[in-house]
Amino acid sequence: MLSKTVAELAGALTRKEVSARELTQAYLDRIHQLNPALNAYVTITAEQALAQADAADARRAQGNAGPLTGIPIAHKDIFCTRGVLTACGSHMLHNFIAPYDACVVERLEQAGAIMLGKTNMDEFAMGSSNETSWFGPVRNPWDQARVPGGSSGGSAAAVAASLCAMATGTDTGGSIRQPASFCGLTGLKPTYGRVSRWGMIAFASSLDQAGPLTHSAEDAALMMNAIAGTDLRDSTCLELPFEDFTAQLNQPLSGLRIGLPREHFTKDLNPAVQAILQEAIRQLELLGATFKEVTLPNNYLSVPAYYVIAPAEASANLSRFDGVRFGYRCANPANLDDLYKRSRGEGFGDEVKRRIMVGTYALSAGYYDAYYIKAQKIRRLIKQDFDLAFNEVDLILGPTSPHTAFKLGEKVSDPVTMYLEDIYTIAVNLAGLPGMSLPAGMLNGLPIGMQLVGPSLSESRLLNVAHQFQKNTDWHTQRPEV
Ligand code: GLN
Image (cartoon, rainbow, N blue to C red; front, side):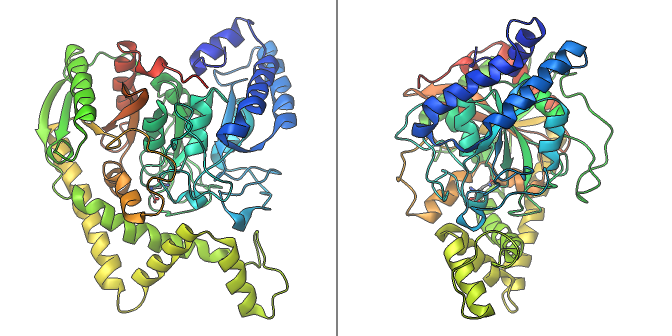
């Protein structure tokens, strides 16, 4: 039962084969059994979950339930949750009890989803392996010697190991898509502005976007129906009418034009990953799609531009953590300067400090034009590459990650290698576009994803293509033995 999709569980709840309370208890039991090894959850909200489950059962009995009513979910610990520890993977917030719910949390609760707890993540979402978390690394359920990807690694591991039915993640440069690829999941990063960032602890505000981590595209569509949409509390949230993301799932793919970026299919891409993508391309051709080469000539500049822009924004966003207002405060400060210095020095981990230093440098007088403005210009060129490509094709297909999940400790001491993890995903954030990763094959017992990218607001089309692919393949139905 626990490894079922959200759509299947909703059916079982409707047919009364199981109650929300039974389902919730079963997930909680499994969490207690497996979380000590996986470290996917940092907080488990058992009591609250059972109370929400009873409310969901009552709502179903009254006949006013939606598809998510009674479905257990895990939230990345970057989302504020009222009355519940919200630590964002950091010592800095190890004691922060949020006074309100993030918009995403609020909307999923209104839809009747049951929060099982909060998931582990890289500190302030900075990382690609979940190894920068103050709570220690998460283990990949497919091979516990390996990372689950990051920064939404806890959410991805929790869904993959059936410790919840679905989870929230956030993606600033790849943090939904890369862990989805490493854990065999479907992960969607929506168009910038589709989902409210209100109550989501800010890393790089012009890049951050929340989205679903699920077993299937259909489940992702169900979650999007709950979380997407106008929110006046986030001034960058787009004002759009409600869109039913499940409406187009069954549209046939005939006439669909897909672009293959020349820059993604090079000798740098692992040949086995390349072969898996070729097989996926063949499958989509059978479904009616046609393929042509496109070019994203500035993609190679995406990682360097991102590592100026994201740290610059992070250095500003993280200035609020000063030992006065939120979270960690050093013991016995001698004066105000000492309070700031030691609270920040002791509260932040190494990767966060590295980003604050890089960001502060890039924004400082004398370097601002050379780094920050230059990076913004590159950002515009990257967006232009996509615009030109989308004059010729409807979507772009390529790898999500150059490889399968790597070993714990393998890259952690080399920041630049770690930064290059996101070579296929980061440009999508810089351009503000929607992108998703879905399981496309297995390599030595480990899942590997493919990435689909579309023009602004093309989520329904992406989900349609992913759903049709999943109706004809079974990569997304595989589950690890934990
Ligand atoms: N790996 C990237 C970084 O460390 C992206 C992280 C993210 O998307 N949150 O910044």
